[in-house]
Image 1 (cartoon, rainbow, N blue to C red):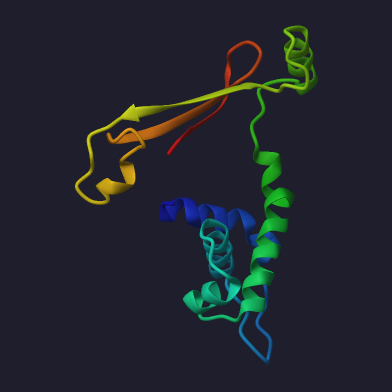
Image 2: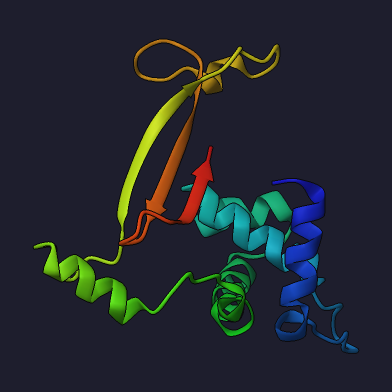
Length: 149
């Protein structure tokens, strides 16, 4: 994740995560809470090892993950882009013998030139360098989500 994206995410989540310092201890910053949560969600480490990574206890890691996970739908769900009435999309797919279908998805490997650093992260299962493109389309073939990793 780019630093600008991380800071934007922190800014958007700040109303739900901002805490005040007390006489007993300093509150975790929003940036640290989001970093802890993202780290825990990205890797399969236990709470203790994530806590060691950030210099906090395992209960603090658990609390940060739960608070960030609760703040995301509360503050960011309204920012999700939808391209149409979901019931209409479901009805059209049902008429095409695809009941309860909200879209069609597919992915492909896009060949790339290997970067000088971290080249091994771009090798796919067929042995060449690529990035994965995934896309979701609605009943009219309009893209509603695209992801390139």
